Length: 181
Image (cartoon, rainbow, N blue to C red; front, side):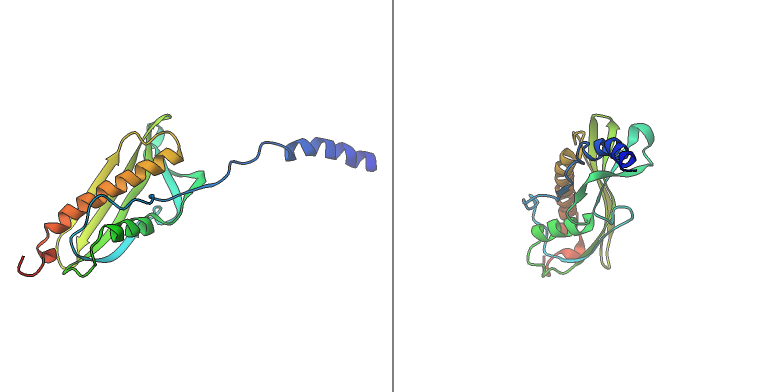
């Protein structure tokens, strides 16, 4: 019996000493505030539709099936996309004492691969001023690389461009203009 156990262990041990799993990585949108300042406004809800309502880093292999969404196995966001966009919006906002309230829904937040070595970061938002207008916008950041780290950097650039577009739109909304302005 001892001999049988020794033989079994000899065959099992090589599997235990195999290559280690890659170290999990966590990303966010970086330390920099967006390059734009938002008009004075109150930030209402910021939410995301499924599957972008989790900390999973989503991607699409458009060259194979653009409708299929997958998550990177060893890479995650530090927070949900809604929480990260909220943080960036707050960084870009003034004192928050504005006359209007902005709600944002994230409809797409993924790295889209056109080929095995080329991708783009895609952020699609639907924004609305409470009691006023609504707008959809889509920002694509090309050259997002072939891995999660490059994609995270491109997603940060795309998110900041989306916030800049939102800023211009909010400033043009009648409900968001200061009284007498």
